[in-house]
Length: 34
Image (cartoon, rainbow, N blue to C red; front, side, top):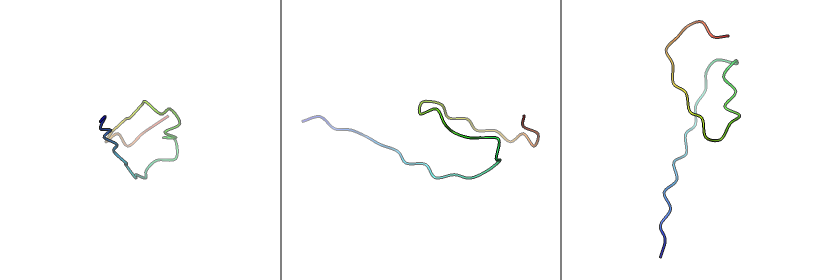
């Protein structure tokens, strides 16, 4: 039997952070984003 682990992250934040790439995860405390 093959086990699969899956994490679900629900977040909110700056409108410039889109999270459109499924393998990228970014965490920042910067107050200015471009």
